Length: 435
Image 1 (cartoon, rainbow, N blue to C red):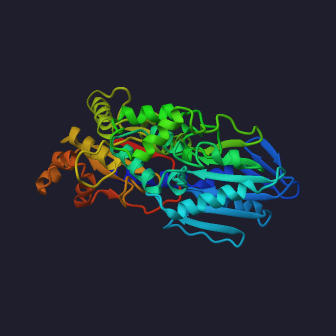
Image 2 (tube, rainbow, N blue to C red; image 1 turned 30 degrees about the vertical axis):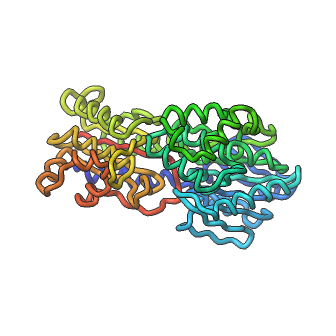
Image 3 (cartoon, one colour; image 1 turned 120 degrees about the vertical axis):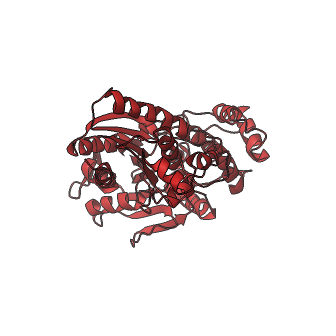
């Protein structure tokens, strides 16, 4: 059995199964005669105007799939996408804004969206297509805060290894549009279709939950900043804003929204993992879906997975060879070095160090959006032989890991996975194959 060949076949299946069009077509339909939108088994009658609001890395694919159903039977649309994406439709306003670093274009788009939903009628329906990346694409700071304040705070949280839920809790309390504030402004009914990019698929966290009630508080945001010892390093404007909110001087994010508004998760990491499970079995592996909620420090997760892999390799526990271990979720990296990399590349580098010299063992780490950290790679692939091949080429994997320089290591070893933008985002996938 050729593990590398199998890995690339499974990667191809991952890419096909994570296409947003698939989820829209499978779970959404529209009857043009009845003017009825069906989401899963719930039917919504469209009585007034029908609008589309689409935001995120999967916005283009989700919108195109929806338009194939609606044809021309909608009134207007707004789409907000990263700068490298393109979209064209005469009924749409298109905004390209910054990702992963927000920019002024995102503020312009946010203002337009809030103004637009506020001017809709109570009989109107707004189909909101929300996917990962929305937090960066819609960065509308609260009064007294600047865009740079938000960027600096987010960068500090990322570098210290904060979870995405924690980062978005802070973001929601610095924003005029996140954390249910979009829903609060809307007069029309919001029907939100979500492609989830967070472990466990919490709708309050995806794109920082602009259309759903926010259960988090200013107190939560303060405690997160305190937990990571950031109270002294974040911009003073941010700290003052959060303290005012904690003391009741600034209104909290909405804890409930109009019951007319409905939110549906139509795609997530779980759906994708089940497809991967089927594909690995098709390739002849005894397969185990270990988790869909993988979180934690990338290299620590890698240590655990390496231990499990060695147990299977040497003792065939908990499953027999040939074996496939499948994980989904999103890890974090505490950055201490000055190198270049991403969470998936860091995990793969840590893993290959732990399994050095073991034959017939492979790991593939992959970001479904095609971008691991602030690099042009989606992840990396490595085997038990990669360590000694690197040493032979004058590269010490341990030194690269210590400097958080996984990208440079895998680039020199020609083991990066590069896909370019995939127009989707369903978290990360870790795949381990053992023969």
